[in-house]
Length: 523
Image (cartoon, rainbow, N blue to C red; front, side, top):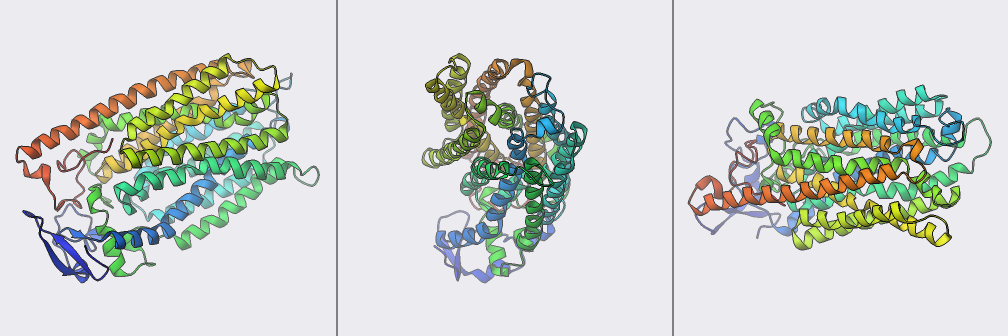
């Protein structure tokens, strides 16, 4: 194996290895016109083997610059979105006229979540188009600063109309976050590393439940002063997001090729280490044929439907989490603390799913396994009575169980970065995925009807329908991807050279997964 001072070239037609100095990585390569010019300056024209030890060293350096930013950014976004749920029991519904005459929360409250995702529906493809054509770290920084400013403006809202305006703007600016992370994961990490990295930042949804619940309790202790407790909540989080946005601008590199924080040698190696992905790093040219292929590819619609089936229950359960838990018979303080436990459960679910995928290499079967507790928890929520303290606890545990399906959403997101190649096609895949995700999030709060509270049977029945559809989609997607791999394996066995390209010499040519017959899908 190679070290930092020398690497091994795997030569086509045999398994013999030729020692060559790592300086070869910096020699001019002769690439086809399909290769992005900036990438071509750092990509080798032959496959270079980098030792596992060196790979681990490079990955740790990338983690410090990229993964840390993704985790902290997503944590801030999750906690920013979660502020509305916490504010719902801190007086915002009363202060902005969102209570019915009988004191229950009106349907207006649901629209404060829905309007965010309607905005995302509209801007998602333009966002994805921009993300792959501009310096991604700088654009992410701008988005964080913009949404932090918008979040702080929530504190100035006096009525429902003002809240709708700032919530819509929040959706527009936050819509860049997850698509950017999918692109960054494919750009910096090997396929086998991406599942864990996507999960690490996605589980910040659970972390925000823990930290957000504790901070919300602290803010709720504010009983006097120029601002209400929920206003301080929004203002504080907004200012923190703005400061962090400037940190991202300073700390995070736009790509391996533009990373001034790494040496030239490291840049070459960071490009080379993701050659095996065959999903490319960067190509700013729009390709109509890839756009059309993306719209016709069944797997892209499969991921999108998984996203919608998980987002619909997620958004409703998230927006109404504290209201639902409080309806089980707990006080406001108990509700805030129990929401923190929910965060721990989400983290356990996501980490467990990553561990199982690593052990079994079965992404879609693991998704199926985690759908089972969601069925059980939802059915029990609809059937158990809510009279005694023991029943309160039982319903609470059932509510936690319903969140198990989060594993499916996270793993599907990581499969997009691993299974979709071609930069234009990837923008289609990511855009379609998040359009469906936004649609699910828009619908989710609306199935929690004010007239159906506090048990919300209609909402939970809708969730059961989502889980059932989710199972069918997962099974269909697994059959399709397995069938595609089988066809390519048969072609390789028959001697089709393109189906068994061990050197991966066309890895940088921005081929789609369908154009590149040596590509194999993970499922």
